[in-house]
Amino acid sequence: MTDNIQSYVDTKLISKNTFSEQLQEIDNSQYSLEIEMFFKSTTTSTKSNIKNHQADYIQQLTQAKTQLKQNTLDSYYDERQSKLDEELTQELEQYLAELLDENNKP
Image (cartoon, rainbow, N blue to C red; front, side, top):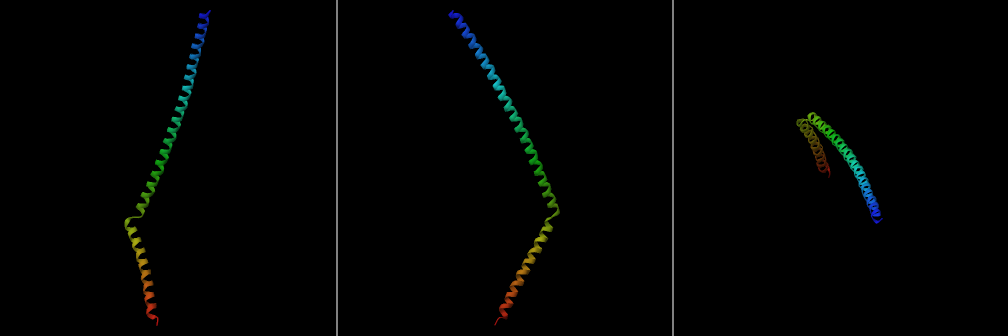
């Protein structure tokens, strides 16, 4: 009788262990599937972000290139020289006006 009970208990333990292993395999496969899905979505999202950033950067470079072609260095120099001449003329006129005012005072 003891042998029968022991055999029954052993059978139940083996069944229980086998069932536990199967559950664990199911759980692990579920986690593996979730990890794989996470990896795929993250990879897809990252690739999309890289493509968007690359497109934006290329657009910025194209705009800068166009702007540089339109505004050559010579035109920049001429424009800057004109502004400086205008500023100097205004300052000289103001300075001369102040000198004349001082000389005309008694």
